[in-house]
Length: 268
Image (cartoon, rainbow, N blue to C red; front, side, top):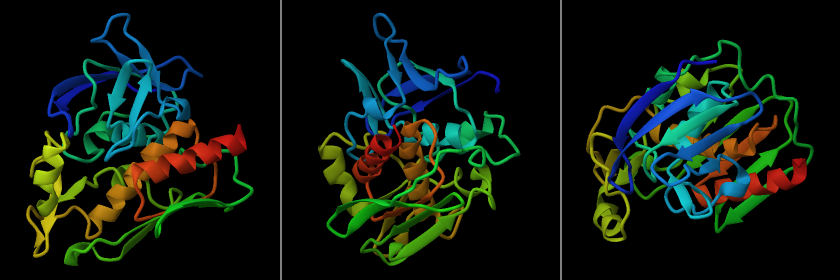
């Protein structure tokens, strides 16, 4: 259980300020969003069935009601062992805050026991999804493990790999502080496409071919840790993440959610 709290901020893609209130929900209700700014306050479950679009963020929908960039908040909830939460929001995008999950977890009561240890569901067969040389996979494993790799044509982001064992390092200190990142030479093109209107050097790490434009980094491999944060947030749409080894290489929200959908079919 945790104390209800509110946070406000700018959405990464919309550039619009929204306020989010996160409250404990009735046991068994799961994690869900409520669009309090819309008539009848529609509910959008944070579930596989709600996945809408996955372009540079994960968007959920229920009919005409939508909520975008849900991955950091959802990762925070599952990383802190919160299974049931009502997330009220007065707009269409969860605020980016400082680009990480740090502010969310600061307001959640982190369970000292590993929240992933209580998982009884397991994966019995490996599952893969791929696009070109990018892939996501889940492999049977006696312990929970997440591995992530990135490889970009920038000197500071070539061939980074990171594996996280929840039973050895907690989510709050190892994953939550890692901020989102982008590339200076892509900003104009993305903004012209109607994306990252709310992005800035205050809420995202930015690099070019000479290095990071706004150091210092919180981790030497902060970028790949952030990709792992996104991966966990997308996998949280399963409700509980089964015990297994999860891998993502050069992956996107599209591949993350494709893997989650395949897992859902196997375990449901």
